[in-house]
Image 1 (cartoon, rainbow, N blue to C red):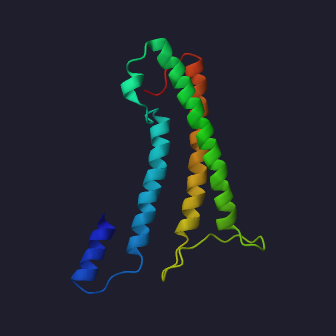
Image 2 (cartoon, helix red, strand yellow):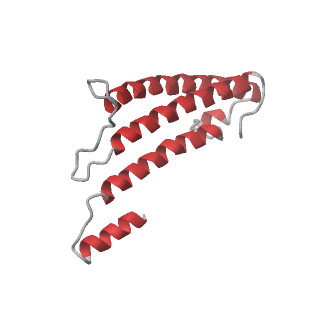
Length: 145
């Protein structure tokens, strides 16, 4: 928010906008979403259709928790693999040298490459978190709720 306020003041008061504020703000928002997913998973607060879930008896909720966690874990793992495919293309040049993808703007930061790496890592961690939740629910332990 401070970056955007600064940009508004610089642009409309001084007539001197920056060339980095928009990209930095988008990058920071994207990181917030990525880590928000990790936090929700760690706290077992991911999305459920509570209208149906709350109507289930405890035994059916346990089965639903196991299935939900397993499906989310498989999905997160598949998305982590897909993210790895993006990272391979955005972090290495055809000659094999390491170079993170840049934005292509006048400032040209490596935000796209960094974000793809962070997304891949976060999805892999989420897959592991969901695997742990699946095992805990299967053992009859409550999640982090």
